[in-house]
Image 1 (cartoon, rainbow, N blue to C red):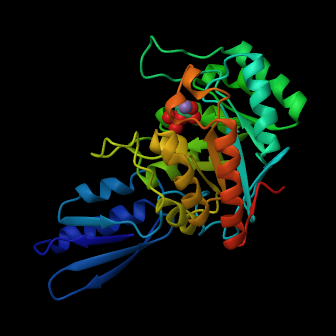
Image 2: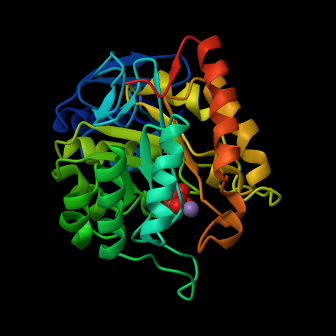
Length: 340
Ligand code: PEP
Ligand code: MN
């Protein structure tokens, strides 16, 4: 970390700052310029108390050199992580495809969807049983009954199940049924929930918060990794901007950016990222072209009758077309769509 002193900092201010740096276990290297003094502090800068250095008398700025996250960073693990859970493989050239309805609604709906998406090449089934809804009057999900239906769909199709957990108290129950625990966008910074999935032995799909910066998102992943769970997938699902023609603004530049900074695989969600069925195919193709390690897509037998997010869901035929196009693009960028 670099500590830049103010131009009018006194020798006493500099000495005090050096002492503060040493007290944090860092080694100060003092660089005296003609205008101001700079202190390069060498050592583990991700320790409590670092940011307080900035409030020292005569200190102008404290500039971190390392990323704030550690276990999630490429500095600590250079090799890309592949997450494999049953039928789903995300990373290492395999583009995992997680498809299914926003919410589990009935046995018929989830089982038919599982068979249809599998036939088209999906490698995991999604479906929300616990739904975080903006309005308390909206459908809240079938809860445990929904988890049981997902387990039945997995039994019949063999597809790994991805489903959301919204509360730390529900983690043991959801983990009984799920192969992958989804942390929804609204819960990206629910630190007790992140700690709880960090301790459970299930892979995690961590969605980016609607107003989460990339550093905040990777620090959220750090909580899960720090809990001892290394099977973490990031999910870019769009962020809130001033633009309101799309439900969210799908930041595809974050895919290659995040891949430079972290070894964790990145899955893209064009359904929530656009909020319009007719925009989903193009953004799915774009995500694959941008190097995404996975796709998560909302697919419903009859989107116009869906209890949630029908307006952004694909029907079976539309999903099949997306898969056909994305397979060609995957091939062009040296990857395999689905693939295990
Ligand atoms: C979902 O996957 O249905 C969902 C609620 O997504 P998000 O958390 O990204 O809004
Ligand atoms: Mn949804």
